[in-house]
Image (cartoon, rainbow, N blue to C red; front, side):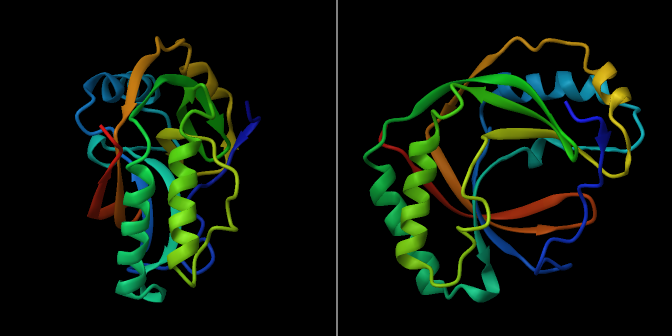
Length: 204
């Protein structure tokens, strides 16, 4: 657990208002138990200063940031998507246990067990991206800890009030991953919003 919270909303290199990123997400759409568990944690945090609660429609598990869409030609994005579809067609849907409480200085999150279960999905996406996209961000975050953020920190301050508020031990629920989404994402104030571009299914 961190001792202090820090502001999540600093501007990452290259990011600016209105500029969009291509990102692969796992979305909890159609899995009410997952969303209910997130909401339980959010209810515990309600009213605390320094936190931005993430609305249900924007809950996501960032799987791979590809790069800025103004640097990626449409043909390369299409080739990446086709490559991801070919690779993911060889994987069966994966079910994991969701609900491991995890705090970062910039966010409160819920993770999965086993922690490496979804790695084959990310690896397929990374291979497809490397094969098709000439300007990408694959080197920026080579390691991955799958999680869905519950709230982002928007200020510097002690972490103790957040830790004390989260006095629950979440009862894990199943999270079934049967598809991934390529989205065009931008930061709008203290929120990530996106347009869904493509849905790619695993072999069901």
